[in-house]
Amino acid sequence: MAETVMEKTQEIKGKGNGKRMMVIGIILALAVVGGAGIAWYYSYQNSHYIVTENANVTGELINIAPGGSGVINEWLVQTGSKVTENQVIGSIEVTAGGSSVTQLLRAPADGTVIKTDATVGKPVAPGQVLAVLTDMNDLYVEANIKETFINEVAKGQLVEVTFDAADGVVLNGEVQSIGLAATSIFSLLPDTNSGGSFTKVTRVIPVRINLPDDSGVSVLPGMNAKVKVHL
Image 1 (spheres, one colour):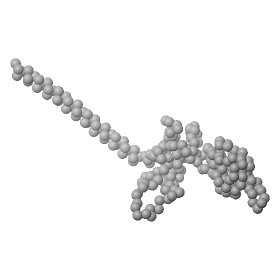
Image 2 (cartoon, rainbow, N blue to C red):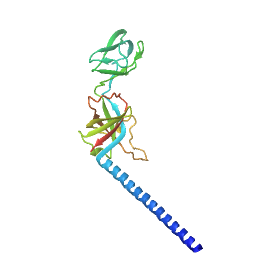
Image 3 (cartoon, rainbow, N blue to C red):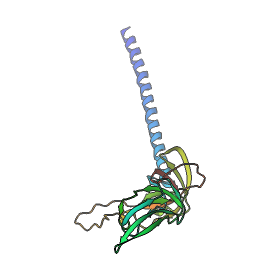
Image 4 (cartoon, rainbow, N blue to C red):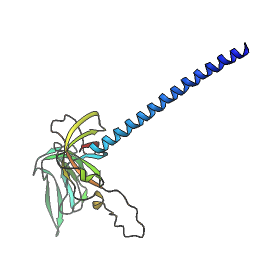
């Protein structure tokens, strides 16, 4: 009788072990399939797209500055003001040779004032930026693409663009131009690698991406963007 009970117990344990091994086998199989699926996904993405979050909205920024030193005696615009080409936006009183001359400051192009740093009565120096102007209807995205991928980018390629400020909105842009130098060349302190030590850093090339005119998305210069270039 005891032997019969023991045999049944061993039989139950054997069945339990078999089920356990089957479950483990299924889990391992799912893990392998899932891993293969993830590997395929990333392989497909890397061979069909270039994706970067190193991108932002910008435009043609125009600095407005006086040609000589003097004192601001009139300032007619503020941030958000729309101006037309050659419109007078202010004036400064320039003193030279004991006499004062009024110098008019004019907008060099149509656009919107996005920054101003001018106060009536404030002294200014030649070249001091008093306002920044841009065309808010001609903004674009500048994406910094790694040098290891830049040869795969070509003018006219489709680009999906998303913005942190417009969650869920995807715009279809287009590569308009590719920079002819890495951004590091234009740094205030360019890396000359003239020292005894050298650390190699992957450089990035600026790529200009046009946005559709009727996007309906309100974006501002400096906003973050993410781009997905279709190869």
